[in-house]
Image 1 (cartoon, helix red, strand yellow):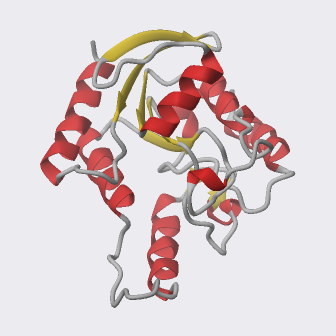
Image 2 (tube, one colour):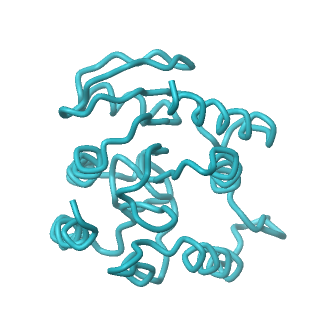
Length: 208
């Protein structure tokens, strides 16, 4: 598939969503061999996903990242909070993982494209995994890393599979042969060293 065809199909699938975040990657999503999958984005950004998209090159993560940092900086603090970290805990861990896994390219995505502060704010209508399924069937990643119990439970229910945490298991999902590794949510209890080691593990699994 060509990038222009991918864009056309993705635009069609996203047309009924307001400011969705279907993916984050550096460049062409079709070149990504690893997926990092959450439940849904926790922050709705003022700039639209397509603001960072190029028909020639794909997604510009650098520009998105700078916008993310600025928006996070300008966002009002919650009550009793005096400061905010430059990156959220999850974002920081993802950056460590993607840095460690290079030169293999990573695509960050979620089962559901609608951003909400908490996953339990998703309605039954919001729990539509068709965009994720399109990405999976089209890109065919060699390994999928999913984090968090909510994602694991939804993943198992959606695709009628049984996942064992902390084990790399081979699956055939929607006609795509891939490996799945499920672990606890990246926001909880992940050190920099552990994040880097995960990136190295995912890197090695690509070549096995």
